[in-house]
Image (cartoon, rainbow, N blue to C red; front, side, top):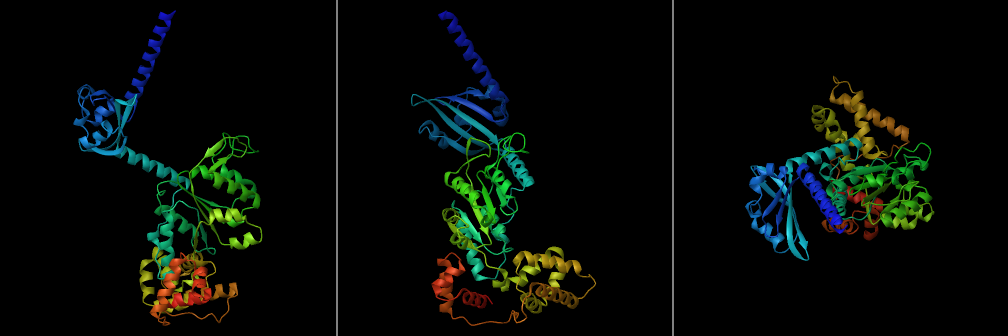
Length: 460
């Protein structure tokens, strides 16, 4: 019986070795094994092709014939793993991982895996393409911004610093100021740039569905649940960024669940029991005053402090008047560059007309406005006729919004003298408060409106 067990054991070992050999041979990775002295004992077909040699020619050679002694010393002497070692064979670029295998603290073997750089790049392209098809890729970058506004430049500089952090960010601003554009730019400037960016509009999804969309659900969790269940947005955004827009619209019960998920970095599917870990950077945004909602007990104070670790406040377009004309011209340029060039010759007149309106819809409204007047324009019309068309559409929007006539436009030539010492104080206050205009005004001892007037004058 003992002999029988011994033979069975040998057969099992042989079976395992056969399976391992099959795995090595059919692996797309190049795989090499050496003994403790660095002599190659195993070489699969993929490795032979990468080394431009027959496997029989590779086996028996010393590993130092293929890799630098500096890298090998780290493995053979210090017993440290080498990852992402760039190497070249026959003009092809490869990435190698060299792993020491220890037995009773002594080096017994070394495994080397090789990946073709071109293959990795193709795989990355496929992954990014798949994410793009699902809409989980951020398109905007900080380099896309064009602004003449000092406070806005300070805001961008602060946002770049925030991008390097892993803490939650809250972005405040009126509708149409570009909160998601900022969120995408932060993601693309961060270490998570190559991973998913998942945007969720908390006000666009019904309350009954939002929980299952955020956290996922198991099969049979509710009537109409997808067979096999579904991942939630937090899972989809793993290793990337989730952008929670209109966060102020969440109900108190859902706020409680979101708080627990943020605290624990774990979630459970609706209708499930399995705990799922995730790694996500959270950026939230709202056009509402969250602190006022906290005071009104409509938003949880503990959730507020979880989300508002880092805070950015985007100014409305009416407080960035020097940017209105350049933004309008950039929108025109996308559709008709020659027309934009002609409008440049009438920039003072154009600026006066555009600045006479308060743009309650901010940059989004300005872009829609540009599309409207471009669509209405007859290509045969003169620049004077186009300016009249712009003026007429502005008047229509002012009438619709009930905007008062005493709001006077500013021309590009208007300037207000701000002493250099005061300019420095204003800049220091903005840097100190991270571009928060309300706090900067408080530091300076002036009203927010006064601060904006001074900033506007400084940027003329």
